Image (cartoon, rainbow, N blue to C red):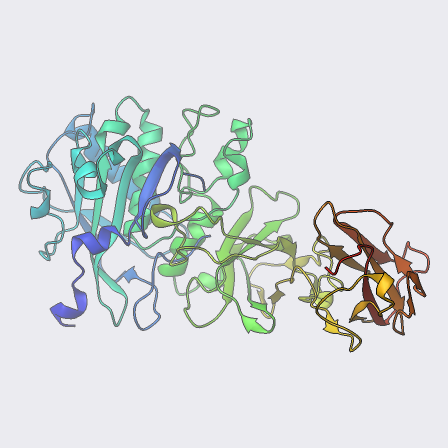
Length: 496
């Protein structure tokens, strides 16, 4: 393993870390930042090597870290070091994971804005935990004013491009924002940042709980969520690792019998038959969906496939759902390497044998639950992302300009097929509010006629502006399998 293979400049590393924030707002690149509250918001590795391997330390030996000898805001060095040790201990205590950490020697100088480059970006075998006493290091590294938003940032500072092995880490804690906070709040920040240093990504699981007015459920927000979960609703929430956090760590540092610790479920996400990366797959146990839940973005552990997996699942009945990653989660708030996240993912459930990318066959609200037992391995739980619309085919009668019906020309016409089991077809006509046009639909044959007199089975109500037409089991006549011809007629005197 050559030095060239390992080296990552500290500036590049900081752009590949993750942070914790105090507020809703976003930072640039993959920054491992914890924001406080002006940034919003699955589990998995923070990044991959060039050979598609998750970044992780060699767990055959302890991860050794060295602390700054200075103070952290209003905390003495002794208090700060104690909280660092306790925070690392939370990760090493994760069941079914094989990881150890050890505090090494103290850094050679009190680190501040004048000398931080002696400790960051230096391949010296030291993993520094830097106490940014007054926020000036944070401003120097991330930009002026960022010390008012960023509680801390961390990263795997050096890693081997071929093997993914992390060989040095980096973490900076912002004492300017940590001053005046409880030990629980500070420890939450430290545990979060050390998670990034150990190779863990952000997660957006249970983000609906953060500001819902109920502080009782904030404990179900993972530690690796990119906003500090100790809000005004629960100002002294004790740090604790959720099942989602534990899965992330155990995936990177598994014991040999990891798969026997709980249920195991895996699958892939596709769109139009092709693998799709960056859809957030969530498994929730039906009886306690907020507490017993894990998330895994498809493809977070592979740049070539839309695979996802879940482990450590307690026995029970689970529901699988898929959602899009928050489009605002970019830069320091990004999840894995999805920066920016892909769009166009509609929230829906895994629907068993009825799973389909066709929203007319697979209702997004229908779910096929899974029964998962200890040691079970359920594979092939594949999700086909629903498309938001089915393209119309040319009906072979007329395309292009929509002439006035007074011209006696046949209407512009298309076709769409309803297969067996299709529940409904919806046609939306988007047109200027001052214009007047209608949708006519005929089952099995083209709409025919002229000068406003046409044969059809369904039509929109006459009137100007945009309108919609739905055919379902409740319409007259009801929907049936076959080809539908869709005609547009123009009530204007001029072409549309």
